[in-house]
Image: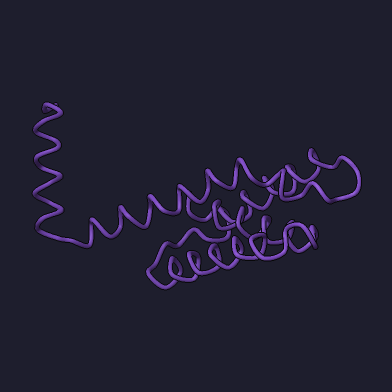
Length: 120
């Protein structure tokens, strides 16, 4: 095992040689950021739903995450482009209609969780 400084130097050289690594890291960081924002914001976005169904909603989202992981096992360029586009579309729905229409938000969250499962 090398030192942390040596590993950092090797990573810097690799990024300098191939800037696609920097782009890959940026896309990955943005997706992870969206995922963590989702973790904190899904419950307030669904406050207008009648009843207290957070356990059932969470269960459906975890099932969706597992299904996404199972369905999207091949990580090819086109598949990842579709995955990121679907994620962006899913997160746009709550931004537009969270307070007026909780059901479309829930469906968008389920789609996003499937994308998270495929991403992981």
